[in-house]
Length: 195
Image (cartoon, rainbow, N blue to C red; front, side, top):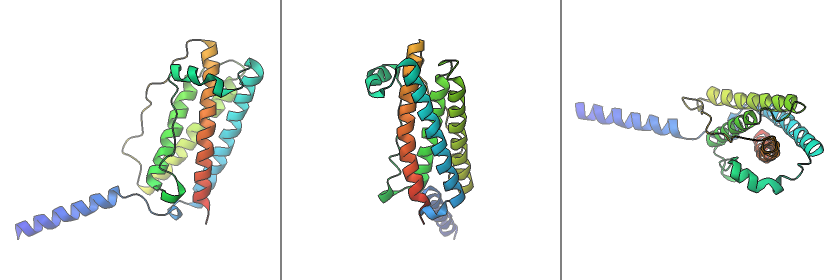
């Protein structure tokens, strides 16, 4: 009897673990209000990022991120993707987690750009706050769904910009990477918002 009770307990705990680890089901488990809010926030951040890029281009003639790729590699400016979010094989838990981690990374990169220039500081600050706000919105939704990790991620090593030029070039690269990430995020969120 004890052996059977122990086996039943082990089987039940194994089943519980599998249920806990399984990804969320269909996108319909996300509230429409959350998705619409995220879509709005993404567009706002995209507009602010574009404004920062335009100002860097107009003021410092740094207009082509592709010309700065080698500098970006030497500075160690990371990129992130949303490879857990393809529409044909969407893993909702993984996708939300990747969205949050990506936004968290870009929040840290934007912080590293502090001191870019007095004229651009307000735009950079607003961009950073809005990225943080969207990351918080996604984290809260993950908590509401019961899929948030026990601890929020911690910021890894960020690039160190040692000159005004590096900071401005970094600004172009970071906003360019952020724009690419947000375009993909927008498509994923729009797909999730479809009835």
